[in-house]
Length: 361
Image (cartoon, rainbow, N blue to C red; front, side):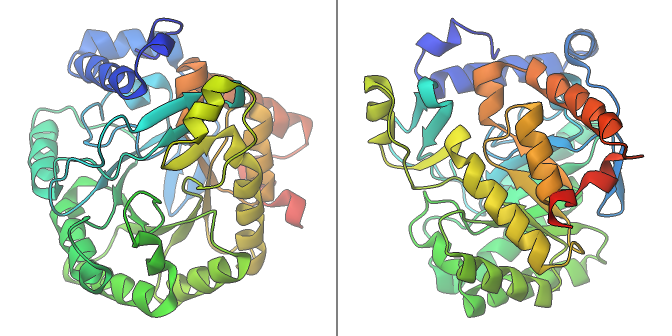
């Protein structure tokens, strides 16, 4: 699956597809799930967020399981919650290949996937079958929703709300993705009036369905601090439940070798370690601006106990990883959670919730 070094010599997208197919197979078998659980079980570090109990704060970020094909397997790899997608209303192939690259020296990925997914209706049908067959994960599940490429921003409210309606019964939380750099014009939805229109349309679906689901907004690390604060305040005025900081970045670090130079020369967003510093800045700024009253999900460069602890103490109630799974393998989940348990104990906190935003107090 995520084993090195075999997978490290393959084309990145092919390796990714192989891993998802393998995990999907494990997820269909109770023996497979028990095997993964025995190998990668993570310890308990309970936290209450969004009115839900999470076994610990670390979840799987969107982009890894785009079509929710391996949904059942992720908890067995130690994750306490899972985000699938991004899903768009219409099926789309995404951008031309190759569109995923590794910069091993920087522990970074570059991707210009472009929301390749089977579309909301197809994903919904697959998830209905999964639930009917008793293979639904026993952890909170989030769905990441993006704008269809063939839809312009004027039609975005109807596009997002249609996907939300299609997937309503198949996630506990919904992440509205206005920040992927790989769909032209998408990041313009950070602008207040555009964002407000999208959120109002989604709120209409929420009202029609009777509520009960958590709505989050995923923000861009490349927006200015002023624009991020403006977007987050507009989102809160429209009843958003939480913020996700952050998506991938278009900024590039200085490459350390020829392979990295090639990767960073490609189009698309950078994830992994180079995103760490900006993600922390945004988490901290949002925590401060909301007075710690709005849960924040920290994502971007979290790959160790140290980086996870920094995200928590900067203000993240929950966290997600993606690139760390590629570079370090699935044991990274239990390693981080074990390390966080030790940090909580050493710092004299009675729970991990007490550590959230501690550096901002």
